[in-house]
Length: 389
Image 1 (cartoon, one colour):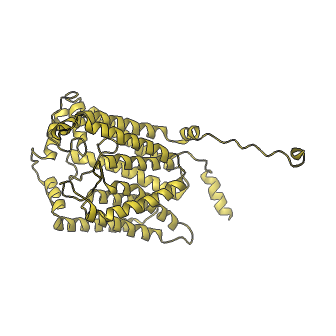
Image 2 (cartoon, rainbow, N blue to C red; image 1 turned 180 degrees about the horizontal axis):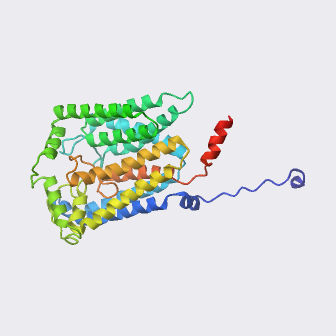
């Protein structure tokens, strides 16, 4: 009787989460990340046994740890990619605050593991590098500030984001970690440019970066040593750059063969910062080109999908994450071929490192969440609605 009087309530059909995720996510980007991780495991099998033997560990100790941390990273990426942009933003802001406090406390509680830079917390069973987790949180946080500044009556988000970038980069420089500082400043500059910043302002900021670099060169022995090594016309064959250069040259087009490479016995960071040298020596230029193509696939497809996005926050945050991901890969490979000074930066999803893998999973999960297909009005409809107001 109630149905006859008031009518039956319409039945709401709930679309299952997994099918909706698979239908809207960028499957090419997701697959590219999985392939990069698989390549990282393959290269880890070649590069890490010499170091494990030197440290008296099981030959595949580092490979097993990379598989574990990589599994956590892939699971984290999957979970984050299923979140809404609003939820991603809220969690990113909280994560940024926690990571920033951890970075600020590094001079007191951190350790350098004998590498001359205090970047890690020693947890006994593992180490934690908070700057890796700072990057995605910072990018999303500043994208939110930049997007808010575009609203009528909004806060001065551009000024706030610039101040935040300077503060974060200053703390990173104290470690010193100029590579991460430059990467964060680059990501902010890209978002600032996409958000409509005047070119003259960006040129002025670039000038300030040059002055800061000159100051760091004059006052940091760690920074000056790396710059001098990069600018030297001769490469010492007994240094990491010398070994990496020789390995890349030896590999040629198709490599010397699986397990036949020698650079892994000489490079202490063959499984981390210089893993691309192992790939070039054993598998040749073909393998390196495949790796580059996979990184390009992630960046280009993400930017193409973001071009269709109407929400300025999503567009800015996604652009910052995609560009930071691609530039980090470029820096790592550029160091190996001596196009850039040594920076101690990992190759995303390929190099060994728990902090790098898990933080990379968070960042790419955010990127996948921002680039998921969403129902949006056509640009003409949006312009017509604004004109009618």
